Image 1 (cartoon, one colour):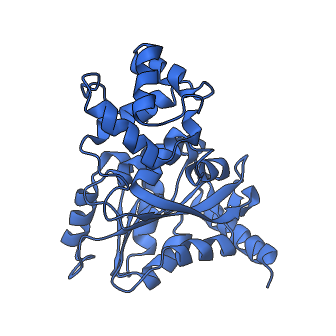
Image 2: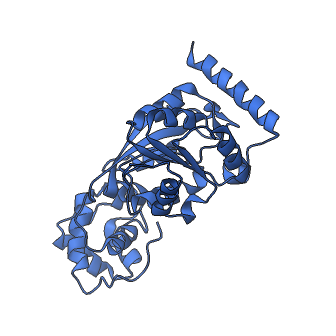
Length: 305
């Protein structure tokens, strides 16, 4: 059976299911239900699930992917903001012992709380607190959810997320096309685009294509940084005027003189004619080592990326 026909079958099944439940996708929640068997298989395969794995699934929707996850993982905890879908999943998966659904906003509940609630429900009996994340993310919260998990305690060991294609490409970019987002993600893990997913793989179809993005989380950040907030304040300053050369962008972002920015770059042995997108993580680390030890870095200002 071709993927086109499998997509059609799952689309029709999803439409029938929604009609029977008298449900419609909520636009304000960015709901687009995945109806592509190839994409579902790619997500599950990329998660590299083992019988002892614990999975936090963000935005399970109608549970099409959840059905696959519970068969491969030791425990699946689904976090669903939509109260209607959470209740439907609870009834649909009532007999599945390794499944728990939480009707919560993922950005307002800590991973420790998610895992502890599942433990209380015996879904994580004899399991460790190591976990993986699988998510079909609404576009408007992609960056926030990525940051949430990358900075979490405990961190996941791996993330597989469905995101907007352009966002996935930006995150997986290499030196020469870096951004604040790619630098932030690659500080914590190695991103890889697994599959491009066309818009007609969803119901209703979004206006743009998506991608399955896999992020292998490092045991420790790529750089040994003692003040992560301060480091990212510096990186953000570098991208403050990304089309300008670094001396101008840093001067603007750090609110210092161009001469001070030039001095900083010279000490870090970075060509002042370069732009922020060309810097590697290692070069940002070198720049921070100098700036962070100077009187200019007072640690003020919270991260806003």
